[in-house]
Length: 631
Image (cartoon, rainbow, N blue to C red; front, top):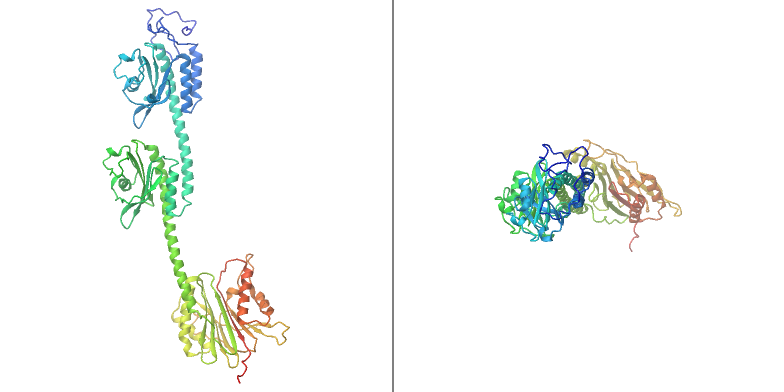
């Protein structure tokens, strides 16, 4: 091949001509007439107009490629276009282990490709250490040469340097002694100077792309773990999701136990299988305890060289422990282990630290949810017990009367409610009925209802009239006054001998009197019993009006709480007095129990699945025909 064409204005250089004082980038003119080394019988160099064509191809290859593997392939092809090599390698320095590793090669065996070359070892290691290119005519005459391929004789190694830092080596080898020339060396130095920039750009692009991908994965992980509220499921899911960003071998989540003042293993996996680890760790103990004590990540590239490490697994070589901090308090530690030295790096540490804060929040939320769930379960058990107690406070069955029948039903809006009803024995043939509705709902209302029921039972032996009973009950509640707490109540006394009903009202819903029609083909008449009064527990010294009603066989007295008429459906319509009146008018010779059942069923059908917002209580008294005289 002919040497590069010289510019027209340049005079031919003679052997005695010394090289110019300044060399210019892109000027490949030889300093002497002899271009090739005298021992290179066939240098196999193909030189085209390098000043233009080669630089253009070099710039195009390096400037248009951000993928590192593609970049290396293009450089290899470009170098082959001007240097007919058979063995070619690009080695890059691993920052953690500080050794050269082959990232691209042509002509080497797989064993050589896997080699790790320390700086200063071999030709390529020397080139990296000395920060200059080395042209070796015969490697057998070179000390410290790595004899990986016995057939190799010549070697040319050029360091890749950017910002005064060696990042790798371009290495060419030949089986011919003296194969590479000074021109080859200069050409490869030019390639290396440009390639170092391209490699760094490609690495930067790879890091940015990987960081963007990692951030996307972290965002997905954060979003997913915040939706898991079961602590055990959360810890297991964290392990699976973390595997997407860090390929660990062993993983543990330890949580702080305030009672024992120790970190306890709550989840551990080993090579993908969940394992049980019983060992606890004190604050400041080992790498895990140290990370918690310092409140910062602890990275041990080689645990055998870290005095803080406490051996728990002989296989472990590298470890990364990151504390979990929530509201300034250490709640646990994430711990990753691997069998390889220097496996975890600062990128892993940053990634895990970024994720640790979200994991800490998720664990705290899951723990809080668990406590709330346990508390809810305890409350449910307590409410169920309270419900059973409340049902025991209400009469299990109505009294047996000769000239009347009584039926009742109580439906709580929640587990327990604030409605109360009771029957009091007032002596032969006389029964008192009390139907009340406590302000509020659920447990507070139920407790107040129990108080009212207890006072009512304590006053029953006095056989007070309805008005006097309400006044006495009001006085008792005044002595035990609770702010904003009161009860509305209807009090009635049935006299079985003459089928009369004495009634007084303390702010409750006015009952309905359903008078049976003497003409069985006609509906009964329904009217409201106009009894009124102040609720109990609000005002002292209250007095109440009292009415006496006479009944005939078949007549009904319907007592009910406001939960019946105030029941609403999905569209917000109320059941109301009119629907209740029409229902009572539509019944044909009803019994007390059939009336109760019909009213509750009508309300249920009207609500059509809508949740009950208030307790529902119905008590129905029906006058009966007197029993036939016995003979």
